[in-house]
Amino acid sequence: MRAAVFPASVLAGETTHVWKRRMQLLIGAAVFAAVAAIPYFVTDIYLQNVLILTLMYAALSQSWNILGGYCGQISLGHALYFGVGAYTTTVLFVKYGISPWLGMGAGGALSVLLALALGYPCFRLAGHYFSIATIVIAETALLLAHNWNYVGAAMGMQWPFNPDSWATLQFARNKLPYFYFALGLFIVTWLVTYAIEESRWGYWWRAVKDNPEAARSLGVTVFESKMAAAAISAFFTAIGGAFYAAFVSYIDPESVMAFRFSLLFALPAVLGGIGTLWGPAVGAAILIPITEITRSYAGGSGSGLDLIIYGGLIMFIALIKPEGILSLFRRSAKEGLAT
Amino acid sequence: MTAEPLLKAERITRRFGGLTANSDISMHVERGEILGLIGPNGAGKSTLFNIIAGAFPPSEGRIIFEGRDITRLSAPKRCRLGIARTFQVPKSFDTMTVIENVIVGGFVRHPSAAAARRAALEVLEFAALRNRADTPASELTPPEKRRLEVARALATEPKLLLLDEVFAGLTPSEARQGSELVKRVREKGVTIVMVEHVMEVVMPLVDRAVVLDLGRVLAEGTPVQVVADPRVISAYLGERHRAA
Image (tube, rainbow over all chains, first blue to last red; front, side, top):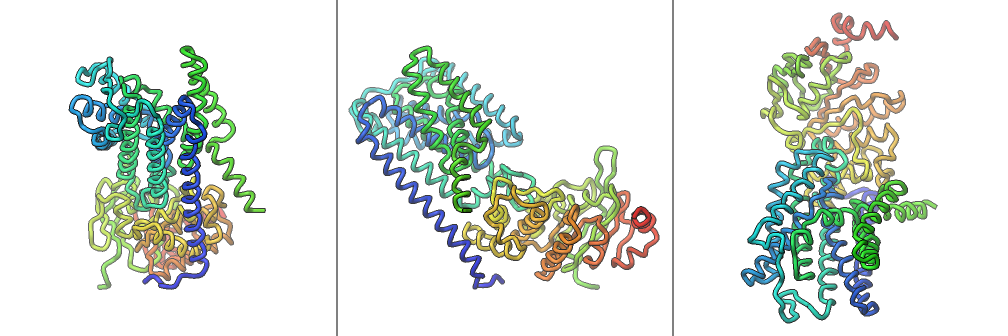
């Protein structure tokens, strides 16, 4: 029988923890409110566009982080789920007139099934072998999309021109709705991560990442844990893909399934702090504006420049702070408490 | 006839390629006892330990836990049934804090994080790690890491706790503290199997010892009986005592 009355120190430890969790929520609310107000001050369409992409990649990196950061399964093939989300929504809308909202759900569901089907063989691979398998699968899917006439093959698919409407997720004149959609998606992925952090899956995933053998000895079903992480991660990545398709209104294989997307989902999390609640957002806030702005200023030849910047940032992080930018703050906060 | 043993190993054989690490081993563990699994290096202790824990299956033979054949059950399922283990080389979750390490184990019995955390705090109190709760596991000292291994296993609320050389490399005073912890775990009603070759620490602690040598059971009995057994002395104790 467990005693009904706990020692005072036990209760104290619990209270501190609950308080820390509430603080996180408050910080989140404050940050989201501040971000929501940005368009009132930044009215330039180009900069708003950069903001939308930053929020979108923050959300996508947050989704990637669930599998890659918390569960430690480094996928470099998430462009596949992004593409499935984009294509499902586009095909259903363009060919059958089905609402993009439903298409988004269908794309998410399809990605979950795909993630489970691919996870079944791939999660038997460990470490780098798993990562290589994800690259190969995503590249294969890219080639298939290139040659699949039903989805437009290499020509891609164009969304029809409709009046601005939330029903069809099309806003040709005013970009603000996209901004709030991207912000909403980011908030949802953040909240999902926040909830996961204090759940059985959250703890089990981190245990799987750190030491699968020890995890198994403590009752953690490693394979099922990885499958669950992959499913949740793939779902939100597909939702992001559906949003992107609506946002750009034209998709082809290269514009939604190229390897560069897989990198762009992983890098913000790695840069900001892998397996942390705020890492993906911090990383995206640094990486995406730099990428977008250099691309527009350097023009057509700038497509190489953003890759050079990625490389430089990765080297910087690997050399200076392998745990990501957030760890700089955490270290100083701890020292502050100690004194 | 006394009550049915908690765990029985029946005719366990395990081969690794051409090497037979365990050969036709039968032994049992009584409820509430501390059983020492001892023997010189290469005797097959770790192999038997891992087969009981479910790290790998035996080539032949059966493991019976509470009357149920668990030979083919995975480690997580055994944990659910009430078998927990520690690792000889501590395998802490190093990106997590001490309490988070213990919470992982707590989820086996408590579905909610709040309940798992409460249980973990109690276990940390018990294992004298409460003041290290929020320390990253990577920053623990070696004896603290050993205690974390035990605490994490206890969080799964086991009936049988398997300890793999928890005293190896500890100073005599650290080992004494470790023995105290093991005794207190037994007082909670947990049955313990400990693999050890630090005889000086184990012998006063265990109720019964099973001595393995060259993959077979060499002797079995109370520490006094085992130490007096001439076969054990020649296989193990004799040489060690001469060397010391």
